[in-house]
Length: 337
Image 1 (cartoon, rainbow, N blue to C red):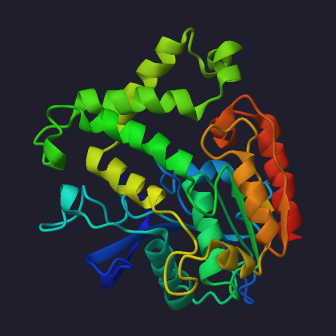
Image 2: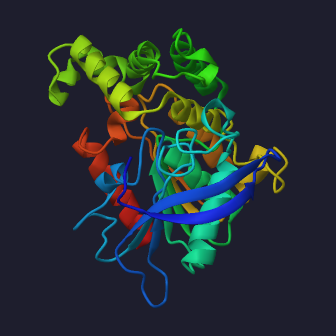
């Protein structure tokens, strides 16, 4: 999957859990040119089922993030099939034996890429959708003196209990496939992947999206047609163990995990020096704006800007909601001004 990128060899990486990720590889792609002052760096991590290529919908000529003005770095999340993942690791860390990689671990390795490899001292902005936004919070808490601004959209600083339960639902649907075999499958668990997709599609969009037939704007005449497309995408595009490795990272999401804040989320949020605009979608079913409102109370330089859209969590998916895209670009321009 995706040969259009560079890879940083990290060697053996000791994880927050104490386990070691052997021969770790961080895949990334850069766009644009870094200025002599190295003050135009924008980091866009990848989201749950995303790669650096999917991030290309968030920037471009004339956009708030523009390769003509910014040096854009897109590091791939561990577990996404491009960076080190269950599907590309050697024994004994292949498949279901892939260790838990937390957001702390991802950002520590991204810091090695940015600071040690690319020579970046200051990051103008870290932004992202969903799990990428969770990484934006993590960057700002883990390296508060390095990050000048963050814009997490449809994301949170700590995975909520309800979000964890949602993820348990899609996980259970996948693992109920008889060919799953604890992750030791010899052929893909197709029925499980299809079930995973069907459950997920009910959460990715809002009730209003289905009630008002907005799926027709995506080219589907019926909800069933949309579900079948989601099935096909998961069967053809994703390894089951990769999906569950990233799901484990997501469930463990907590910017206060690790030695800096010892699980004190208020302390972690309060330590964020970056100017922040938090942009939830009011109809997001698993990253609700209430979570961001609580976070903003403890962040010294945060502004909450909820956006109402029937597209729910997928309002942020490039091309879905032009109003969301315009609001996102306007907020990014403010932070980069």
